[in-house]
Length: 304
Image 1 (cartoon, rainbow, N blue to C red):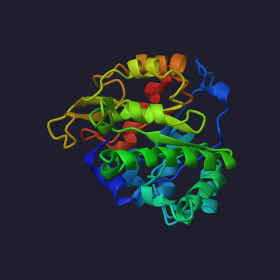
Image 2 (image 1 turned 180 degrees about the horizontal axis):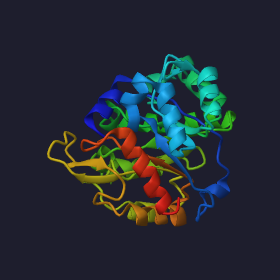
Image 3 (image 1 turned 90 degrees about the vertical axis):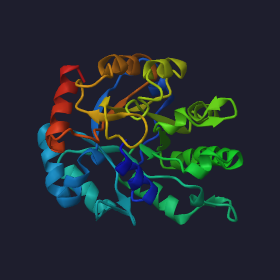
Image 4 (image 1 turned 180 degrees about the vertical axis):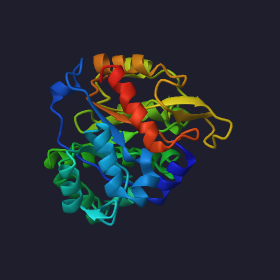
């Protein structure tokens, strides 16, 4: 994920998602269903200029599933849930998941309940027929405050309970800091995995974000079998201009250093992965829409 994406997440201008609670058998390996979608942040500029036209182009490319990254004031890309759902349906598109950042402020300690804003996030996601409400970020203050981190894990699990009431599941999406931040003698990534209830909190493994910090996603899939119901599919190349500190940026699938095809085989066999979400955030001078068209073609060549 690029620095611009991080800024986008920090500002809170991010997407909400949700979706039907996945039965436990879907978490058993191997996964029997594989659905390939696109994280719309991959074409963020086009979505900002012409969301209707961009969605039509994605549908024409052959995409059937999208993951949103823009839910602001109860609107998806400027449309309320009713209108956005209609536009997706008219294009034969479905939205199984989306991103919205859960922050400590979404829990009202005085009321011992979630704020109305977070409840609305879940309600709108449920209306959209989504399957996951995924938080793609963790505030830095949470990472370095053990007590706040513990409360955040409890909040994640409570959000899972809230989502279950709507037949959905809450989820978390990693970046790279989970592999460098330590909680005692444990990596933050492992702390999250060990302190979230698998029945309530899904994990969306981003294999690109982690590269340069943790370069072996297959080892994580084997360490936590059945835990990664969703995956962000990326490839990476070295980058002299990378500002995140990992030294890599995303590129067209199959043109980078990640053996993505082997990772996908492990995800299907051991990870319990059902949803494969393409995300490309850097383009090396190629039009982003052309990039995601090639990405989808590559996935089809690999059998997905």
